[in-house]
Amino acid sequence: MQITAALVRERSAPFVIETLDLAAPRADELIVRVVASGMCQTDLHGRDGYYAVTSFPAVFGHEGSGIVHAIGSAVRDFAPGDHVVMSYPWCGECANCRRQRLNYCLNARNLKNKGTRADGSTLLGKNGAPVYGAFFQQSSFGTFALTQARYAIKVRRDAPLELIAPLACSGQTGAGAVLNVLKPNAGDSFAVFGAGAVGLSAVMAAKAAGCAPIIAVDVHDHRLALARELGAAHTINARHCADVVSEIRNIVEGGVHYTVDTSAAPKALREAIESLLPAGTCVLLGSARAGIEASFEMPFLQQGRIVRGVVQGDSVPREFIPRLVDLMMAGQFPLEKMIKFYDLADINLAAQESTAGIAIKPVLRMPH
Ligand SMILES: [Zn+2]
Ligand SMILES: [Zn+2]
Image (cartoon, rainbow, N blue to C red; front, top):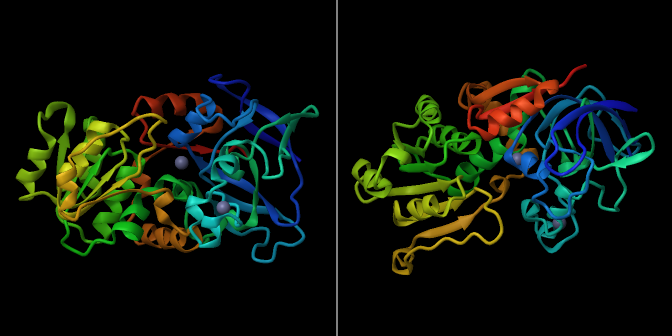
């Protein structure tokens, strides 16, 4: 079938809206009529060729939500008309998938970034030439996307599809770090470093879990204002603060129980670690480029402190995304406050405003 999609012709080229051919679904696949797609930094990393395995021309997008349009012959748990979110891919066969650590799949890099199915076949084409889609096995920057049924998550029909798209990646990454990994008790103190879409999702989850106080650290005042609106009792603009760690210890004596770093900046990670109470935990969510190192004092860690990285919030999407949708529908996860909508045709503006920090979570609406 023909679709309209945002194509990147070569590394770092702008997105161009093109008509492309989408393959028919195999037995275990489905086609989703995409209603909306969030845009993450990862899409722009893909566009700019950060991932060595990426080929061009390519279609990106990995936070798609929409309505099931067609199903493969072996798909039993979906029917056309179902509302779905598409989440991250996994192989199901590696050592980590076999023990249900799907978000740490050993084949994730190729499945996310190579632009083909696992067997190397392409999903998209233009005038008979291959186009590399299958970004996160979905490529949601288009009117229709093909994915494996096992990566789709059915969601309740009264949830607005254009609002829940970001749950597929940034939403579950930030919220999952809090609710699946840290599992705070009500009254535990919490600080987030970096108040973008992931950090603010962590703030909303910390608020829902009853954390107090919640502290947000960032370098943009408008993001800190939103963090406050979403539940942060204290905010620190690191650009105007000489000593963030002392400032946090002034707010909560001795430091906080939990910190989350979404910035992937070595200075912020060190501050996130040094802000911890003994036996506190720091979670690293930001994706730093290869070769970046961070340092901290070893005796400081010895006091029971934990530092660990987390991918996709350690979420099992089929369980966690519906839970976040319920929270959102109950008013406890007001994602809409961080979203800025764009038409697909304005995708380059969305990318530009995302990079500039103007749009916290761009969401593209697909033309139909
Ligand atoms: Zn795997
Ligand atoms: Zn993402």
